[in-house]
Image (tube, rainbow, N blue to C red; front, side, top):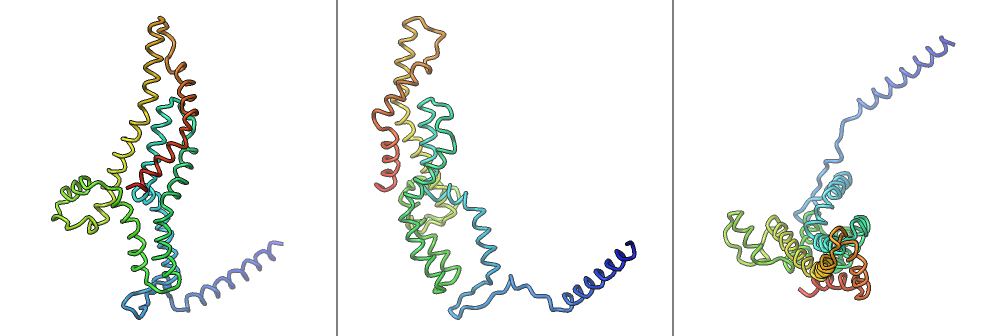
Length: 253
């Protein structure tokens, strides 16, 4: 049995050596880095490079979701609403995240349709090059961000960057527009959160005052006020009002 094993091992080594020799005899090629002109002054890349670029884009997708869409405002407002209700982790983070994502898709649907019509479909039909498709895809997002960004925030980042005055907001580079947009979204989200917090804060104050007047110092006002806040929120159809207000805050501007 040992001799049989040695013979089989020897045959396997011979086969592996011959296979390696055939591979090494072939000329080495790096097809993944093949670049060919498209005849229109541009360049097209091999399929492997396109897949690599797609995988790289997927890694920065969370950053794009946070910095170039309505997700940030929606998530912050919903988190402040949960804090105002005083329901601790109900609804939990997964529920708020899912609701924020679907609201973002709903609000960003017109922008995504423009990207599909102007960039994705022409690129798939090989009517435009990679660079042109990327430029066209950014334009709808730029328009959306400009509508939601305050001029004061744009001026702030232009001043910080040390650039010369920009002739019009449409000429703002994306490196300045993205942080200005995020600052504006944070301001708007906290303003909406403040208005949502007020009625629940009033209920807490009223309950706390009543408990103090009754001498019930050891009883937490949150235990008593929570049912009243939930009842108020349900009676006014709070979730529908909040979602409608969030959507209107983007479409109305």
